[in-house]
Image (cartoon, rainbow, N blue to C red; front, side, top):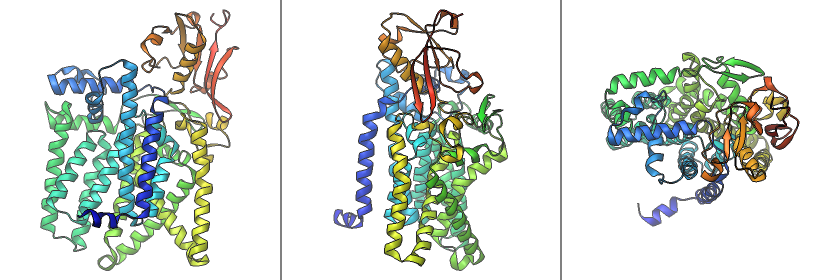
Length: 525
């Protein structure tokens, strides 16, 4: 394609999307160092190191790691890409690279939304909604399990729709490589091969593509996916089939065996109630997006029913894409409920379905706009819907700015009237991110060379602190030896904390997510 032809295809929404993406890139590079260290990050760092060493030197230590069947590809990339410097700089580089993975996912999502909706303005709206999703935005900096998988899943969905338009061998090969890379990050991406088969079947029965060509492309796709998956996953090298079977069994029923706060009660997470994921998905996205998703599901299901009733005449590529997106969003939730898979820490293990849910949301917004147009006319409808979007999205952006960098504790009004009420129903800072700020405050205000700290979770890593500060902080599991107590209000059964001298706190709305107490001699006993 010539440059002039390319520029003629680039529309105003495309240029605005480029500006939004550049602004996002500048923002992310500016703030990535402001997020705390989560409990999972040291384990993920170890997982990456062990896989990297096995790949290079056949070091067998990975096979003694309980988490060896977590997809290693992104963790290996982080090890290969980071500089060999101090531990705090290693973690900071991980946060930056994690954000860049999210950034690439945002680019892929815009392209996917543009293809799905065939409307640049709707795609731009979808991109804005993805960025203004508080929990997703925060996790983009520190969650190396779920956010890179979300990005890879989005890339695969875009590649899948592109492949289904022209199911040729070259496109099948590229989709196979993308699918293998995604599966080497998280195995729940196995739905993509199933959707590929579904999409090709729809192409065959609607007589848009010959079955022999589709079958050949599908076989090549599956073979290349399997081959590249083994290549990307070092722990599979000794015995690919047995290793994959064990990994699938391990991840479908992940043995976490913990308890968690859910709707005001402590429950087991292995497995959680069947409605666990549905409730979390209902109370954490902004209400505007949730309304669009609900309308979109109804609209798309109605279109599928109508098209299937007159398949030959009405089952167009647009209906096929809608079927794929519906299955990509809803299918994993059905599988999780059916298998009784262990879920914990909200619904982060299902974050990857968020981008197809946003596509469904865009269909809901479009249907609402068209409904209003039929009653009020185009100009009034455009002004009304634009105003509603602005009114709905400005408070989200304002909340994200006001409570930065704790966007990960966002809830909508369905969770409760205020944050204090929500805190009694759902965990807030379950990652322990706010502990970083508490430790920094102690180091800033206490000149002592040896400071004993009791942290409620007893899991908090110190990796983001410079080495000189790590030398001053000593974590203790004995309250009698501690100078300070740090609590992040996760265990509501222990509230209120029985300490009197609060020297620092972090609040979200009217609820505290961190308190730092200076312990008196009497409170140490």
